[in-house]
Amino acid sequence: MATPNYGYEKRQKELAKKRKKEDKLKSKSERKVGGEHDGAPADVSDEGLDGANSSGVQSDPNAASGS
Image (cartoon, rainbow, N blue to C red):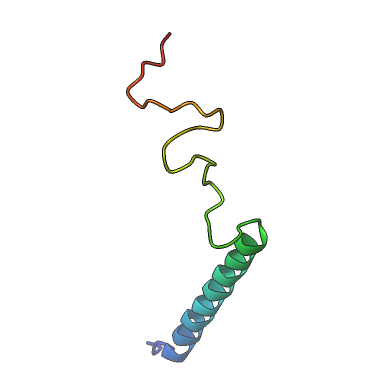
């Protein structure tokens, strides 16, 4: 019976780790170039801290949306 080639397995594991790290850095740089500025997430809305929307009307989370 042949003995396991642990060196080969280790090398493959290291290559997979390196590939994953490079992919992570690539996606991170793409997100940075993709439009995020000043560390703020891209999906942040323009609502103020008081909960007013862009028309100046306060949004009521308890209001019925049916009528």
